[in-house]
Picture 1 (tube, rainbow, N blue to C red):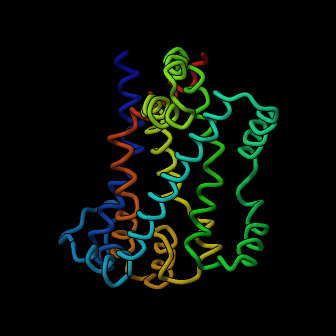
Picture 2 (cartoon, helix red, strand yellow):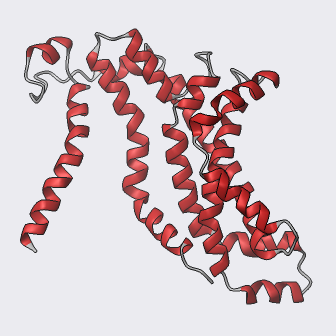
Amino acid sequence: MGLLYIVLIAIAILQIYPLIWLFELSLKTNQEVFGMSPFALPKHPQWSNYVDAWTSGNIKSYFFNSVWYTIVAVVLTLILASFVTFALTRMQWKLKGFILALFMAAYMIPLHSTLIPLFNIFNHAHLINNPLSIIISYVTFNLPITVMILLGFYKSLPREIEEAAIMDGCSVHRLFFRITLPMTAPVLSTAAIINMIYNWNEFVFVNTFINSEKWKTLTVGVNNFVGQYLTDWGAIGATLVISILPILIAYIFLSDRIIEGLAAGSVKG
């Protein structure tokens, strides 16, 4: 058992050290980056690198674009996925199996194979360089996995509560919003976290559909910043730290909810 703990601690250190090294890089000057060992600590931490990245590198604008893209897309995805899952598990209609098969098939479609068709569609709809193209893409590609997560949880919910509500004269709409949806809060939080991580880290859609600096997200903004300030390694490190910090904090505090929600969603009723 002691040997197992030693191995696990060594693996944890190997996983965490790149983040520590990146933080050290963000506090160095160019002279320290090229004139010292890559593993050396900064002699005089340059906290101004973060100020330069936030202001001069336009990271502030990219950051807030990422925030509101992520929030809007997550909310829309959860609402639409809840509608779909409720219809698939609680209603009887002819094409239910076919629609479920479509969502499962959509989950297997590679993202990169859709870029050219999506670009043509958005171009004809005049949505290139428009935030709507990003939000629509996020919602569309996150719907299948979100429906799959919710599906198992919905099947495990007791139907007796819903049947009692129907007997009391509750309409389908009130049944969904007042009873079923609140009961799915644990798995919704899990789906929200998974969607948030994907949307925050997404690069391909923004890089393909957005050209204006005004609407770019943090992931693409970091890429532009690296190309423009290639020699300012401290500012580059600060930009990367800013980009990973929100998702790292979310993972540290909410990782248990992800595991619990996925386990709950795997239960079949």
